[in-house]
Length: 141
Image (cartoon, rainbow, N blue to C red; front, side):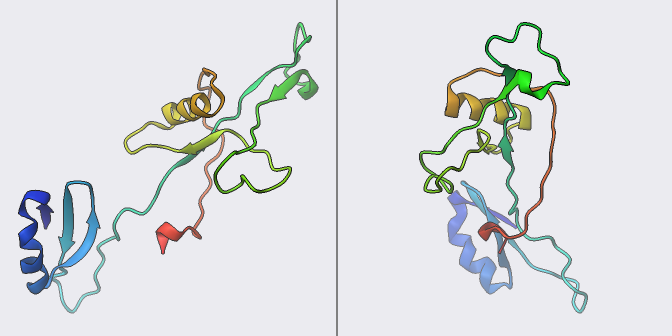
């Protein structure tokens, strides 16, 4: 059952009726009750995933007139050192510019936005390179 902010007085009523909290958004809470006893509740948990993005930005090295795609030394890779965040206090730690995608934001738009925010440069999205999954985040507990 979805209860909007305008009807929040109904939350205690739903709890007394056997509903449990499932998830919440900015303007509502979602409660659920499993009605198929004695079968196991198969309802998936509330949303706990997020999408992190990083931009792999390359350009020809200064002074290289006709860069050879097979010669990696003809190119430079953009890396940054964070001023704040998880890796800011690590010495000699460099990373790709990136961060979290906003809700409903396409991956390509998130990558280009993060590069612009962190480095002040406009980029073009070429292709998706890597997908990584991690199960050790505090949000998933």
